[in-house]
Image (cartoon, rainbow, N blue to C red):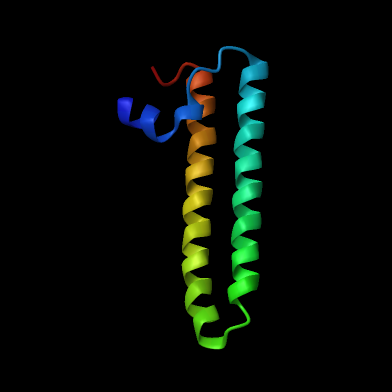
Length: 86
């Protein structure tokens, strides 16, 4: 459990519904920010033919990793709030 608390620091400690909603909004803003950064990086590097395709694949992997992290964080947040995780 300590490892999860280190990896997902926002996912624990929501005592009330407003804390839960606030932390879900934080995760949504993190997803939006990461998506915009990856989109901008793809646009900047995308105009180079060979490099664009290699970096595009790497950016997709990074995007998937970020999505998995954020969805896992939201899932842990909900499970902690409903007292399933203790």
